[in-house]
Length: 136
Image (cartoon, rainbow, N blue to C red):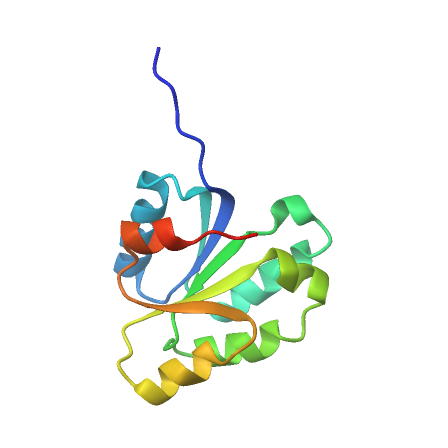
C-alpha cells in the first residue's frame, strides 16, 4: 500500500507575472510536499482581491505567499503596501516571502525590513529553501 506524505502547508499563494516561472515554482512546491494546493495569480491586484474576499474564511486563506517584486501594473512593493492594511488576524496567519530575480541590494534590504516579509529568496524556489520554512 502506497502512503502519501502529508504536505507541510494546506494552501500556498504564488504571485508572478511570468507563466513559466509560476509553472516551475508550482511544480516544485507540490513535488516537495510543501503545499497541498497552489493558488496562482499573474496579477498582484487579483491576489489582494482573493485575500480580501476570503479574510473571514480562514480555511480559504493560504498560509504562505510567494510573490515576485517586479511585475507590470502592480509590483510586489505595491502589494506589500496594500497587504500591510489587512487586519492582524490575517497577517498572523498568512506569511509573505519574496521570490525575485533582483540583485539590487537596496530592494533586497527594503523588503527584508518590511515587517510583513518573512524572508527573501532568489529565484527559483528550491527544495532547500522550502525545507527551511517552518512557521510557529
